[in-house]
Structure formats: C-alpha cells, structure tokens
Image (cartoon, rainbow, N blue to C red):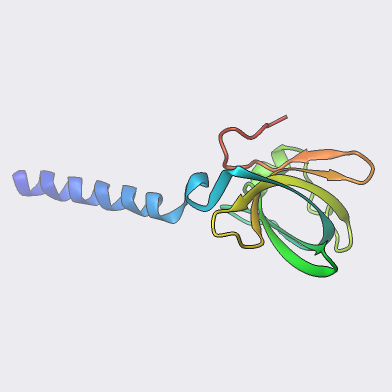
Length: 132
C-alpha cells in the first residue's frame, strides 16, 4: 500500500511540475517598471496558445526595429473582442505594455489602439494590467 501511495504522489508531482515549467510568469520575463509605448506597423499576427504574438516595425532614430509583442491566448483575445482579421500587415498601432527584462525588442502588451481610436485589451499576464 505504501508503494502504491508513493507512486500516486510521484505521478501527481510530475504532472504539476510539467504545468509549472510549461508557462512563465510575467515577472520572470517582463519588467513592470519598464512601461513602453510603441507606434508601428504590423508585420505579422500569430493567434496561438498559450500566447498570441503581434510583430510590428517601429522606427527609432531612423532605424526600423521589429518588435515581438506577447498578448494573451487566442481564445482570450476573441473573448475581449478581437477578430483574426483585425491586424492585417500594414495596420498602424499604438501599443502600451512592458518591455522584456533583457532589454530586447520584446514586450508584453496591455492594450493596442488603432488610428481611429478603437482600443483592444491584450489579456496581459501582468496582474496589474487593465482588462476593460
């Protein structure tokens, strides 16, 4: 009986460890003390799980940098009013979010605003991010 009980515990711990390793926390990758505002043109949008990604070209000091912007999962975005057709290449966006801790051109998105003023929330993994 002891061996069966120990085996069951081992299986549970292994399954739980997989979930913990499969997903990162916001603070592990992004810095809440580094808010950013970016304006750029969409080059690609990937609706996926566990995170979707928006790629935009941002001009800074005459140089174009392609930023990778992490959002919530595809289902999360759809529940917030996003459509797969919202971000064709060339769409200009204003992005609010937080930069990656390593200083790369990567950020976690709080919201995007279109040139017509429409705003969509991105399902950020930052607990302090607005949802509406």
